[in-house]
Image (cartoon, rainbow, N blue to C red; front, side, top):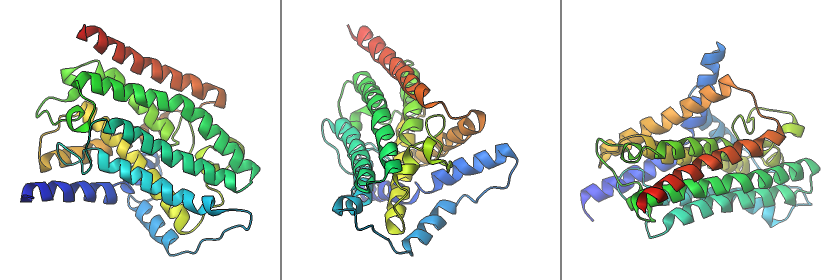
Length: 308
């Protein structure tokens, strides 16, 4: 194994493990600046994780092993998905034909165990949040698959190594301008999958309006740290995928620098969206996701039509 490949893999692991907790801090910092407040520091996410890891976990006698496994499996699934997505080079640490499907499946596995853990508590509030999460994911996941299908058709391949291949000074969206439409759909999925406004409000304290937050009310200590870290990794992965669509990615370490700028830009965009609009009514969320799906389907149809 040559030194360049070792450096590429080390950068991949460093970005995947170290950068995600910074993104929620960027989002909150942008929201504070727009609102004219000082707000928390950019490193608050790291401090919160360190504090939670020092605490102990409390488990109800009514819960089973599913409740304890939920945070661990959820975090392991999103980290495994991160191994499939190229971050610092042309290929990821794990690469095989069809890995785009495995990427989406691992994200779905993470959600599945989070929902199971919420249901395992027997709490009416957590069951309500799990029901909402499952319902909205039925709209969000098809949009993600449509976006991934659009990328595969544009690249003529079914692996991230070819789909997100570095293209020097030309972004993927410049090779196929219709991918800008797919990028808009992907940003909508990013907001939905990461419990951000306008789909969910991560800062709400009213159980009747919560989705993700109400599912993790009974978790504490290291378990809650795993959940928060997993959520940050998930936001990072969606932001990285979006950055690959709209930014030029040179090969080598320069590509890693572009990725960092791209994911930070996505976090800033999320903060601006949350500062500019309110949360949608529950009945409007499916319409929002169906609209995103229509955009992704349009992009896919245009590419398929061009290929004939």
